[in-house]
Length: 139
Image (cartoon, rainbow, N blue to C red; front, top):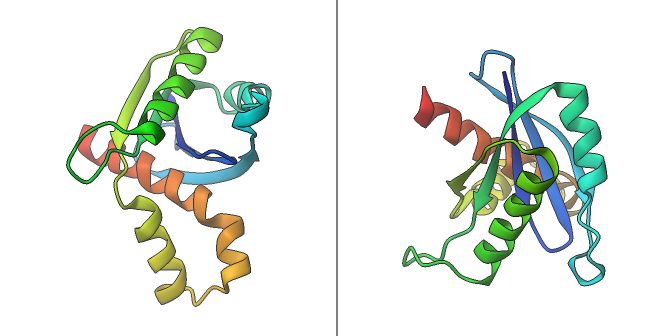
């Protein structure tokens, strides 16, 4: 049983998967998407679902700080609907407020990563944090 965590943005989707026991999350890759052209990277997600034998998705839900659902959270929920339609697998939503900020701080403070390098990995790290937070809550 593996879960896939997704950090859905307007230009990229960070992807993480759990270990087979569902204890830890590992970053896999960042998929480039283009919402304007309705290119959502679902075919690449399908390849990863098959490769890792994913049984469930965890999509980050970027709620507003006052706990309301805004345009970005609505876009993440639409992405979740596409996953359900394509894969017929359950989709859970994990509150992801501040995960990108936390990920960036980790890369700056702990890894001393340059801005250019941070941009290349930030969404993958955010996906790891989304999935790990879900796994910790579940276990």
